[in-house]
Each structure stands twice: as C-alpha cells, then as structure tokens.
Image 1 (cartoon, rainbow, N blue to C red):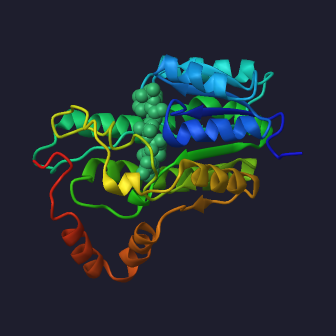
Image 2 (image 1 turned 135 degrees about the vertical axis):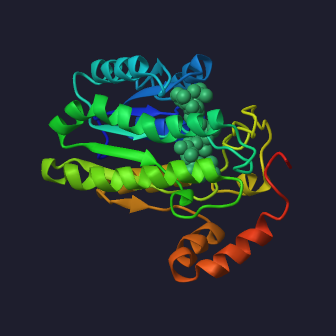
Image 3 (image 1 turned 120 degrees about the vertical axis):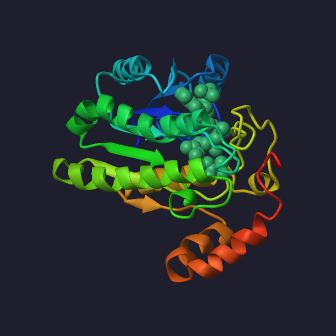
Length: 270
Ligand SMILES: NC(=O)c1ccc[n+]([C@@H]2O[C@H](COP(=O)([O-])OP(=O)(O)OC[C@H]3O[C@@H](n4cnc5c(N)ncnc54)[C@H](OP(=O)(O)O)[C@@H]3O)[C@@H](O)[C@H]2O)c1
C-alpha cells in the first residue's frame, strides 16, 4: 500500500504544471487532494482526469487571507477531518531589468511566491501538526542562484528558502516535516505566465523551459522525498545543478557564464 493512501493533502497551483502533476500523482497513490488555483475550468478538468472522487477543486487566490482559510477548511472537510500535508506550488515568474520593472510586479511576485507561504502555513499548521505531517514548498534553483533579469523571482525564492529553513527548525520538535523542492527548468507554462516589466503576461515559452524536465520527474522525486522526510531536493538538469555547485565555490566564474547566457537581454528584449 502506498504511503499516501487515505492521507489528505492541500495542493496549490494545481491548475497547471508542477502543481497539477503533483495533485494527480498524489491522487493516483490513494490520497484525497484539495486542489487549489484560480482557474475553475482547469481544476474541474483535473478532477475529471484523476481517479474518481480523489481530487476536490478549491477555487481561490493564495494572495487572499479569506480564500486561503476557506481552502484549508474545504481541504480538511474533504479529507475526512484531517490534513496530512500542504504542497505549495502556486507561483509566478518575471523578466526585466531592476530599473525597468514596476514595483507592482515585484510586489505581486513576492506576494504569490513568498507571503502566500506564510499565509498557508498559518492556516494549515494546526491541522498538519495533529498528523505530524508535511509542509512542502516548490522553491527553485533560483532560491540559491540569482540571474540577470530575474531579480524579483530569485529574491522571492531566496526568501522562501530562508523561511523554510527557519520553519523546519521551529517545527522539528513537533514532528512536522518541512521539505523544500528546488527544481531547475521544468516544462510548464511558467514562462508564458511570467510578468514583463510593465506587469503584462509574457505569453510565450522559452527554449530552456521547453527543453526542461517533465513535471512527472519532479512529482516522483517529491513524493519519494515526502515519504523519506528529506529536508531538500533539487531535481534539475546538469546546467542548473552546476550553477548551484559553482555559486559558493567559484562565484566569479558563475557570473561570467551568466553574462554569456543572458547576453540576449530579458524575455521581453527591453
Ligand atoms: N517550471 C519551471 O521551470 C520551474 C522551475 C523551478 C521552480 N518552479 C516553481 O514551480 C511552481 C509551479 O510553477 P509551474 O512551473 O507549474 O508554473 P505554471 O504552469 O505557470 O503554474 C503556476 C500555478 O500557480 C497558480 N497560481 C499563480 N498565482 C496564483 C494565485 N495568486 N493564487 C492561486 N494560484 C496561483 C496558477 O493557477 P491559476 O492561474 O489558475 O490561479 C498555476 O496553477 C512555482 O512556484 C514556480 O516558481 C518552476
């Protein structure tokens, strides 16, 4: 029997990409999943693709206190009065020079990728603590390595890493497991949904994302890491994994590689 059989999870960002694949993976392993995102139609389609009755769509915005409390309540009800884990995958990216990107874009990225984590943890922890369960956040290699034109995204993921490290230590005595998942490029809609400097959507993918990992690879690694109660995993291609290794050992070399890689400018070519 799977470790996840009969357990209850809340998965955010479940309408697309990594979150959608994680929700399906958990449901296929026998969990009951409350699947949260803003796109109702995509959540309904996800529920129809999953084993019958295992995925409950919860429409909501992770930037809203009210939505988040309601999502946690729905998850606990759907999962028979228990919640074994939170997987926070909702997130957005951005591209542009610091001098050009509007403050509103920085705020939206920090709100979605960082402050939402605090909001979700506050709402879900009382239930997860009872099960000595799991808090999982999808961070990024960008939580260790900043890159040109991705300042807001990298800052949000560095902040997320710090938050998870503190949380892991605070919750260890209560037996609550905290896992940080730090993927490299993964084939999802992250670039299409990324914000340009003026806040509009980029609407196109990139060759790095299209050549990235299949989300199923991240799902498999994440589910096994939850079961093994690991602290951090970094499913990534060779190039992104090398960046994480080079950062503390040879930061000057890493800068030189980055300058070459990003000579083309930000996504929007501004
Ligand atoms: N793809 C990569 O290369 C990559 C690499 C490293 C880390 N990551 C991280 O992986 C996570 C998932 O991203 P992805 O690649 O799967 O991208 P994606 O395909 O664009 O999915 C993003 C998900 O986040 C949800 N979301 C965004 N803002 C939200 C909000 N305010 N409230 C509720 N849900 C919201 C979206 O749903 P709605 O729009 O329906 O609300 C969607 O389900 C993110 O945290 C991202 O930073 C991705």
